[in-house]
Length: 476
Image (cartoon, rainbow, N blue to C red; front, side, top):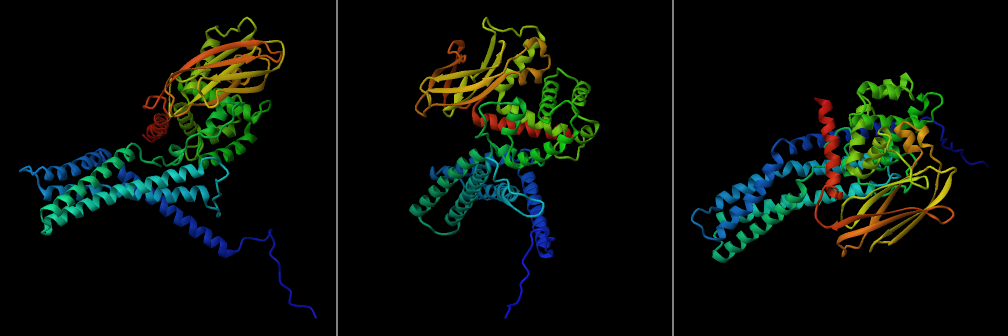
């Protein structure tokens, strides 16, 4: 006797109505959370509000501290007022951090209709951990201010006696100092202030290729947060169909990025820049690039380039020297027909730095070269790479993207132990496939623990500020 037949699900069937309704409900919930994030972030960053929070975080524990000195003008009531106002001022950034964490988690990890997980992209865990740490710090400073106010209120309202009163006041001073320390750390930057690229300021390049095949494209993509990187991938796939015949999609994109970079330097006008882009893209692509409603367009790409430039000024110094030498007729080869240029920041912090190497092979044929990097007291001290280097016909190449395409560009991470400081030399040697040395250059960097213009923290803040500055200039 046959049992009852059960219809098996088919992967090609239409999506059930319940799943569709659930997706729409999730989408509305995500939109509400994101609107709350924008609201509380806007309230937290009202003009002078960060400075007001900072000075109240100093004034509150100071007003409690003078009570311990028995100064005639000290007042428990004033200290309570200061801590109460501080507690209220700390509420908006606390809510901003909460909604920022929820919004980021939805953007990066949710898998529903209209959303896809970005966990395949590097940096997801780092962004979420950074936001989680910020929430903890926000809670610590908020509850420290509240507990300080309650301790002082107990001294004011209850007969605590001299000893217990002094203990409670001291407790409020200590908690106020803890609140100030966290305020000093947190007020330097408010995350997710950009509406178009909210996660960009939280991303730091950790994984990247040592060889940059398409120099500007590869370095720009390495500095994109997972959400923006996903949007970039989708955008470049759509743009591939709009490339003019005779140009590859990757070469056309690199050509456009070089035009945008030269425009930013003031070497190309906006009309010349658009004319250069029209050489490689069809009119339909230009319509999409100039669409102000699109997430990726000319303006947003300029923002992303500015963000990348703030992160890696050394690479852009190499590119600018190459372009200037080409235009001034100073792009010459050495006696053995090779050109090598390096860039290493004069100062390096946190025991790490980025070395950029650009090599042009002016010989008669392609060659596999050996690049040896010797870092004094580094980890490791010696790095060796064997990479192919194609022949460059410098006199026949006139465009910047052509010069970059014909070059071998390396992005090498350097590291030193935390106990090492002071000036340290780095030697870069280029050996041919026959073992002969083609070039050898020594550069030097000074290891320091203090902040400086090219330290990681300053570069990250500068990169976020560049994106915000461009976004504000466009909105105006």
